Amino acid sequence: MTMKTIAAAVLAVMLYAGGANAFRGGMMMKGGGGGPFGGGFMDPGLMLPALLHGVGLTADQKTKVRNILESHHAKFRALFQDLHAANQALADKLFVTGPVHSEDFNDQLQKVAQIRTQLMQEGLAVALEVRNVLTPEQLAKAVTLRQRLESLRTEMRQLLGEPSEMLPEGGD
Image 1 (cartoon, rainbow, N blue to C red):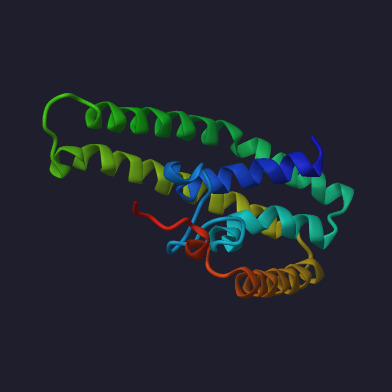
Image 2: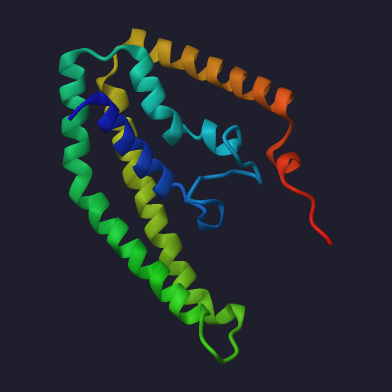
């Protein structure tokens, strides 16, 4: 498994665990942000692959990271299956011919939220285990990289405007 594959796996896990927004093509957004420069880009789970790549992992560290990911694979797989089933149950209840009310969805929403919380906790466990593989120098480099990424994000938003400003105007 290459580092790109590992990074993609971590990214996918953290994206999905963080609450992928089905109405925005699966991209995680925070605070109404969106698009390629929106708030989701700076989410720690999304930054992890970039930071891992940027800190210069040794071959031994890459093996340790791979082992960490593999040790959590079965748990993530089960949680993703549970989340898919819970989302399906929610959709099944929503798309019926009779009337529905928000309180009709309390149990389904609670189940989805519970599974997403478990996914985020598992993702945090992975991130903390991966973090423990890094040297103090690599951690310091990761801090610097994160700050640089944040600066770039801010500059992109200044140049391009807020993502909501890029949306077409509504109305006829």
